[in-house]
Image (tube, rainbow, N blue to C red; front, side):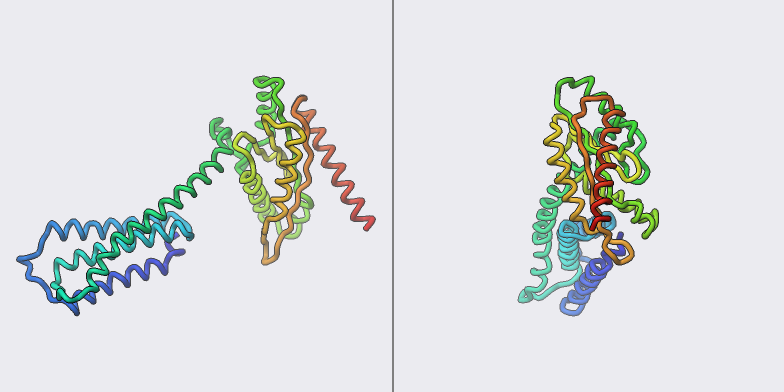
Length: 298
């Protein structure tokens, strides 16, 4: 990860060398007898710790606004504290002001870190919301689908029965989504690229679901969505929204965009799971036949 931030590390290192150069050339070395060791340890220690935090931040995060604010602010604290520490080794003319500007980097850096933490907080809220959509799976401590990290068809059937048994009379809908022409993607780009398409579609669907909805990989290129407290009409409207979101994806393979579209079918989850899934499978098959007939006619 540090390779992504090589420029930031180089600039920070050069800034420290510039500080040493300025103090050594424009200042006069103080005798060791008047060095204030308490200040040297506290200010130098602050610079060292800020530098370590810069490395921790850059080694654990990709680029972006939050990373720039956190790493940049910590780097300013490091440089300002380092300049403050060099003040204990070199005497600077009282008429000079550049050393005060260097030391002023500390409060400016603290302001940048505060802004970075503010945006990091909002980033964490979005990540937590995304993870909550998988919470039902985490609580089960069960194995995920190897490719998409979603639940499988068996888990979906158990959850349908759970909703029917523990919440009788409460509306619940089941949606089945199928990727159009997925076999063509596998044929043209290979199975590995097909797996990436499944992962991308799964992430896009999760980002657009509510916390109580359960997304599973049903089979092959099909995803199943269980929506408690939702009527079939509401589920159909949500499914159209999901279809639109996936249709706007910009997935690329071998320097070309791979168009991705979905078909969907939905029913009220008021029958045995296998019966519901068979009904949805037939609906999707009819839609595929209709598209094929339309394409042939055209």
